[in-house]
Image (cartoon, rainbow, N blue to C red; front, side, top):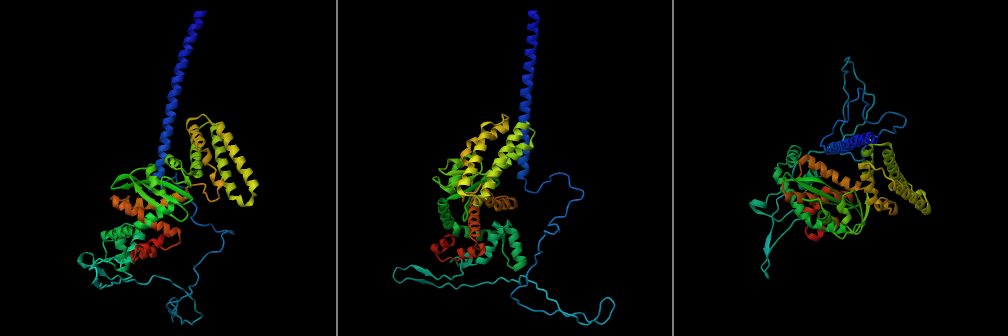
Length: 461
């Protein structure tokens, strides 16, 4: 009897060992499948062109607003206040259908606003050069429309400031290549210029803008709230990183080889002590600053985890976390409707509910990893409820990155590190001027024709 029990026990132990091996094998397979699924999701996000989201509908709805009672008043252009030219369009004297005589009934008005034909103008500057009788130094005159004092056969023929400003705007803000801009100038304005000539002209904008860029860096170090972010870049076909730091009235860019603390500190300063609205990138937490973790990233991660098969308890936990974050965003929007005491009570309830969820997380691998991430950043989740000026997301930085991403997709990055440095300077100035409601073209013209460094620095002060 004892021998039989021992045999049965040995058999059950072998079966248990095989079952444990099988469970371990399935867990490894599950982790590998989840990793591949996450990789495919990331690949879809990195695509340069739109991708299919499934089979097309047999009868798709028409795009645009749908006609209904809530459509609202249809907008149309108003009649212009200034009329530059008037033309009378006579009515035909004979009907084109039956040949009968036509009698004038009434007249109608139509307005057409267009761009007038543009022809390039060339200015010849005769620069008078003198010499000081006391010190012997040579002095040259300077006209307000000159962009440089160069003369002679090599540097004496240049592109004017308005053309350079327009080309800079089209390349950096609109993503057009220099070759396409040169073709555009030739076809529309009759201005014959090479792609290389436009590129060198933009370098003059970057050289003039270097002191302004340094002034903006100093201003950024004093900003109370900043949203930094980074994205991949290419320089001469090799991997690099574009970093940005965005504040309400300043946006800075830099292109560097790495993605570490030193690269972020170049824009913010190593001793930045304000508030940073960031994603989950660890180096940002090395600053002596208060951190607000981007809730949009956390909501997106929770949603992606719920899309994969998992136990019901894990799914409910993820939904609970998402609900707390959404209620926090709703509370932020209702701040003005509540008293200070009522707002503090609502905030405390949200914090307590989140703590209860974090005290009992699911033990599933990726959900537990997400829970551990939230525990590490627990005191960085609701900073936006304590400070009105702090955003709940780092959308400001992501919006600042979008024009650079469009430029990267159109041009593939930069060919040289000098071009990358010029890219960072010029795009920083253009974005900052746009945030301050200034015309990028007018500001570029003022920068190119500024008579002194102090006059140029006034453009960013």
